[in-house]
Length: 500
Ligand code: ADP
Ligand code: MG
Image (cartoon, rainbow, N blue to C red; front, top):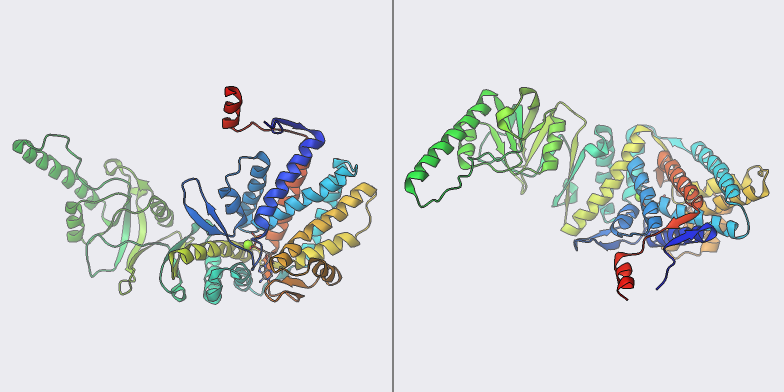
């Protein structure tokens, strides 16, 4: 039985950390860029998904190793901050650690490595800033980064319409306030819709299609309480029916008194309630998902209430609910309130698999479009910005400490992991590619044509690149400073040991 996991100290701990981080980097690196492979991930419940998103791969990998978890957290932090760049962050972090370890093994102090890295980070960020260009309009800039995010994914065939939607969505709402609705159909019919869309119908057929006014958001069954009696006794049944009838009348008249235009219910509605709403011309939708209820509450400045009996008038939402798309195969309800910063994207896809892929591609694209619409500075992608940053670091004034200087240069090398990996996904010659880029850092790697060329049409938000560098460097430094690692052994192993 190996004991290596119990406690590792000093150099041993550093070696372990670096080897684990490198392993994690290896796992995601093949997904980078437009030729990146998808990975099929199966979670604990047996659900599977195809993905090429670094963060989801690490999340679904279910790794219990502490180092792997820290790397996954770094990727997640990147995603939370700028919605994309997770693979790039992970492999840059792994490369920074790998090259640091080479220096440490040669006798360079960890502190000198950290100083060199920090100094190089500064130069890299300044270089990224000075290479940034400002879009003509936030829309133009956002659309361009959305195009880059969609390239190489199955959604690419519809890049024009999808990137336009992303850029418009970016100006309409925060990514968290945008609901993506995948459904069968032709992607050409993709649509950005104000407010919240739910793929539901009115509980009764009606000609009316617009309902404006107060909106009741109810998380309670709209039906009589269930009686727990022996139904064989006919006298009891009549009695119960009467009590139930009265109960329902009270609830429905409470709704009438509030002058409500729409009732949206998270649970069911019984036929009495539906008949009542029909007579009163109230829109009634039932079995709505909890997440949708909360989105609608946000959009209409209302709250989801759990009990009709003690509802306050301020808790009602207000706005307009429309029945839409009735002629098509998928009618839906659109809820629009005063809070205009809420939007939905209807995203038809040919199959269930592609629907999931489209959603993920759009998810990334909406995120970067949003970041860019807020700050329309972009830098050239395709490994070009990394080549430029590396060149600037290499050309900078030498540091006073020769060891820190070595680390500074190692940082420059580590940045090149991005163009190198892009070249690898296209099976390009690595030495030639890196050589060409070091001479012409204004060029980039085109995995699709397998050459180094002008790639200025591929752009990334400046903020994404800066955040990637900061996250990778911060985490590399904090992992390098760790000189003790304790890892509990898996329970089964401990158990087996005790049994033997
Ligand atoms: P991440 O999770 O880091 O965002 P991606 O798989 O989205 O990983 O890959 C992003 C990298 O691919 C960036 O360096 C970006 O510049 C590059 N890239 C994106 N599209 C292209 C393209 N068409 N040609 C070359 N490189 C591209
Ligand atoms: Mg990406």
